[in-house]
Image 1 (spheres, helix red, strand yellow):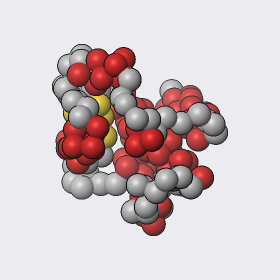
Image 2 (cartoon, one colour):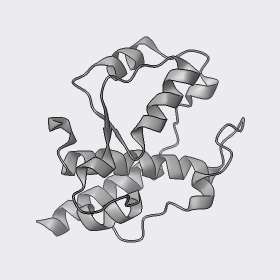
Image 3 (cartoon, one colour):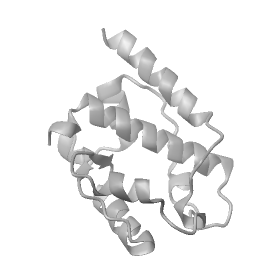
Length: 140
């Protein structure tokens, strides 16, 4: 069962990383109403590592309210301040996830994101989603 789940997650992660379409709020001009409604809906959990920081930035920079932010580190028992990479290894069986610190701390406000930044963002989003599902974040 774990092997099948790991294969499915790995396949989805690769698909996400190969995605050519990206939506960058910084250059969108305005946040689409459908995205505002979705993020303001308390039935939808916005799951992330350091979620308060992300929610604060969305509010400050885009006026986007997140009704329900769920911190991944709260969902994993006994892992302390574990990285997403470590959580993915422990809970999803994904070894060697690509999340280099130098990319995570790079210039995200740049006019054009690098390929590495886009891949990093895709990995981050996919891991957040799959960890949230695996750890039942929707029930919190």
